[in-house]
Length: 188
Image 1 (cartoon, helix red, strand yellow):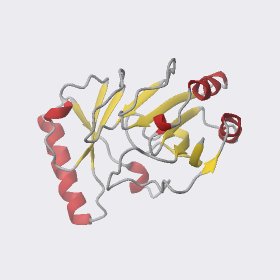
Image 2: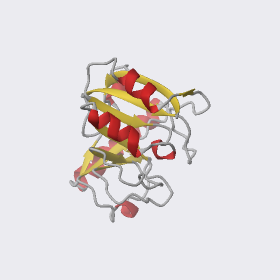
Image 3: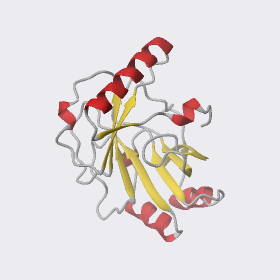
């Protein structure tokens, strides 16, 4: 598998924000989002055994499979190995590809972009907010709906999007505000 990096930190966003977690960042994506923070061209080839050995170095029992897009490479056998090792397995995905046959994840965070979602189960819907029309997200079934202001890299625009995100959540209380706390705390 092409792995961009494996590192240990606190989950910075969404329902598990603040949770110590081992991040397995897959290289490669089927979308090209302007705000993506992954260098897709950088990777190390790793076997499932290599991945399990590397995540075992850290004390957390929470794994976050992220990317890029994990479903381009994710296997049921890797998830089964992680579960067998006692890990809680969360995946962050754009949702454009189905999970591998028989794959059982503990938590699925789906951040849809401008492509059809092919997942049959979403625990957490996370929308990166740029001021877009939110009605296309009304039909998604998810336990939690998180609205995350887009980090544009420009302080004035970020402040505007944060204010707009807060207003949207107040007007639509089924949505929760999700901030990228790892960026606010200046951690990975």
